Length: 174
Image (cartoon, rainbow, N blue to C red; front, side):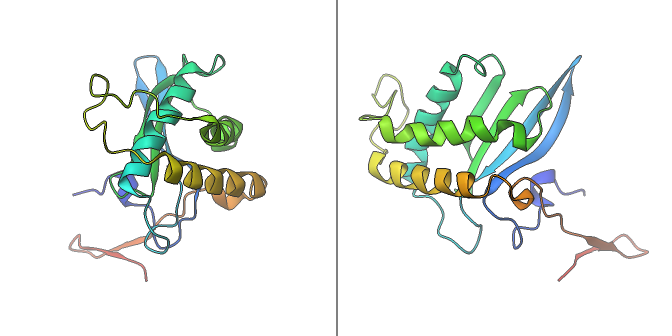
């Protein structure tokens, strides 16, 4: 069985950044899924669940209200491993082309005094938010994006190489 694209990424080599996870044709349109990796997997702690939830609400609100991008946004949500987010956009922009958008989105978190949509009527787990930790993670990631804007490593996925034996068994390189 083939590994799905996100499992073929070498998580021992990936750094925080913005990566293309996959591109799919939807009729005549291309849809791109971006891996927005906020922490280094299996090295740095994952983002606290409540902070991740707050970041989801705040950045989704930001993206869906940005006049230049809102019509291209399909989805913004957390990864199950809590090391980052998936952003799905219409079109086929390179990660460097959305760097400014994501930098602005993460920078905007500092301006929030409350998490948008954090009411029982709007959210399935409205009590599970941590705005202060969300601000901390957002500032940390925004500083990192800004400092590494010219570092190609934050835009290019490290792929795992797989050796395939004659009988079809697959092994990852060490």
